Length: 339
Image 1 (cartoon, helix red, strand yellow):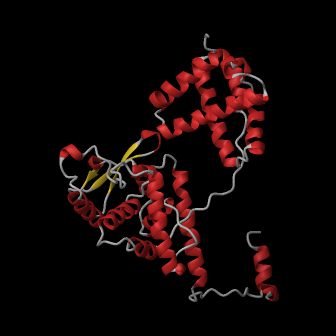
Image 2: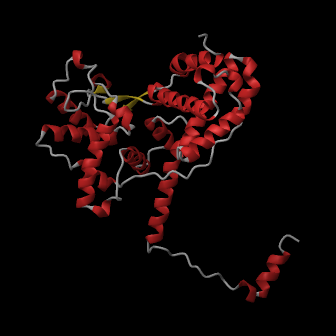
Image 3: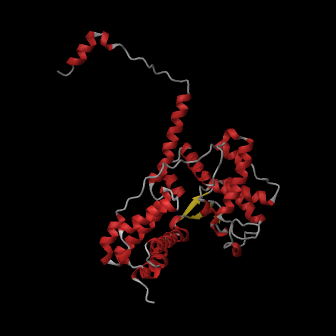
């Protein structure tokens, strides 16, 4: 059977354009793939259009709106998930505008479907004292504990995303001065992050203990599980949950009820800002494309300072206004000023 124009362009979009030209990560491409799988399932089940028969003539704004409504009502998708699915469709339509000009009008109609407002994302972070307490939890007398200590320390010190940490290879680490770690972020964008001297020394000892100092080991995963395979996102999350649970139980006053791996990244950003590091440098450190993403930490820091000032008893400003109205001479002078 001859493929439809939709099948042709979708295949090129997912297999060539996204990884080759747009440079998106495999995880993002898989998310886009899932969007279109669900979309074709919806069309087959509710619109009686089989995937092999679906063409670009079927891809209209009304159909996309019905799909988004179905996601929310029948699959209980929250607004943010709905927006992720719509973003994939928007990206495909922008691609079609370049590759298939006859579709421009329909593409623009779909592109005009707005994203839904989502709840304001709260930024989870802990104090410097809490982070120090948490990093002391792994048992340094055990080899697995030493690995976990290095992993948690690097997660904080580098400000890495969980996937960036899981993807690290031995060759991404430089322990010689100046010590750095090479992180591969969203869209396969790479950045070099400096490491503090204590972190560099921890990594040097870790690499030596695990026989990862020779060039033929540079392609090995930096952190491995019991099976000697690359540690996954779920594996990192498990380690964080394990030690966070211990820390919260021992010092509940330092922590909230739970602590996610991303909290390490947020906490590092807050601590850098509190140390006087410029927001532009923090943006580069975290790998943010837009400074507005980084500015959320400045707002949090400002709120923390405001609360600290409110608790201070060093307020010498009087809250009583002078009774100017009783001083008719002053009032008349003010009224006539400049006349």
